[in-house]
Image (cartoon, rainbow, N blue to C red; front, top):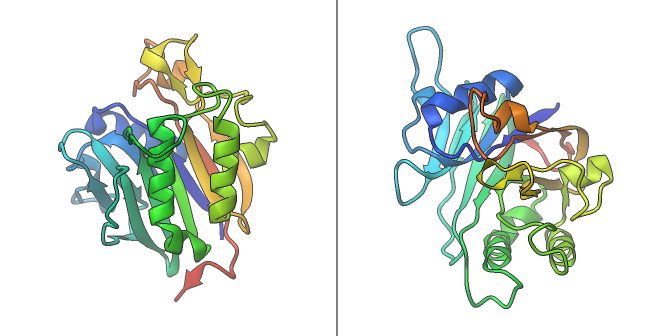
Length: 250
C-alpha cells in the first residue's frame, strides 16, 4: 500500500483554509500546526463522516492538529513529558494497516547546547520519542522552525545526526537529492515575503520506507494575495510506500 502524508502550517483560520488542503491532496494523514482544537471539518454531517482529529495546545485557536482520512482511526498516545513542545504522537489504523505519526511544531527551548532554541526543541521532541521511532513504523511531520537558511553553518550537520540517530530520512531531500540548506523549493515565506524563504516544514520517514513522490506547494497558490487558503507556509506532501516488515496490519 501507499500512504499520502501532508504537513502544512495553516497560520490559523482552520475552518476556512483546511478544506483546500484536503481537496488538493486527499491525504491519508495531515499534520497541521497553528490549527484550532475544534475544526468544523472533523464534525460528521448527514452525508459524510468527519475527518478524525487529535490536537494539542494551550490556546484553542492555535495548536497542533493531526487529521486522518475519513474512516481511519486516530488514537493519541500518552504525552511523554518534555520541555520542547509540541510533539503529538498518534497511533493510526487505516483499513487495518497500523502505523504511527509524530506531529511536530517546535517552540524555542533554551539551554540545550544546540545552536538555536528551535534546534534544541526538535532534538528534545524526537529524543523523548526514541522508543517509538526505533520501532520503525512512525512518520515525523510538521513545522520544525529551523533550517539551513536560518542556520547555514550548523543546521545541516545537526539535522543529519538527528536523522541518523533515529533511523529516519527526510522525504524531500531523499527524493530530490538536494542538500540541506540548498533546497530548490521553500516551505516558509516569512511574513509572506518572496525574498524571505526557508525550508523548515518536513516529512521524515523510516529508512526502510520508499518515497514515491514529493510535492511542495507554490507561493502564488498558498501565500499570494489571491490565495484561497492563505498562509506564509506552503504544504509539503509525500507519497510513501511503507516497509511491510514495519507496518502492522490486522
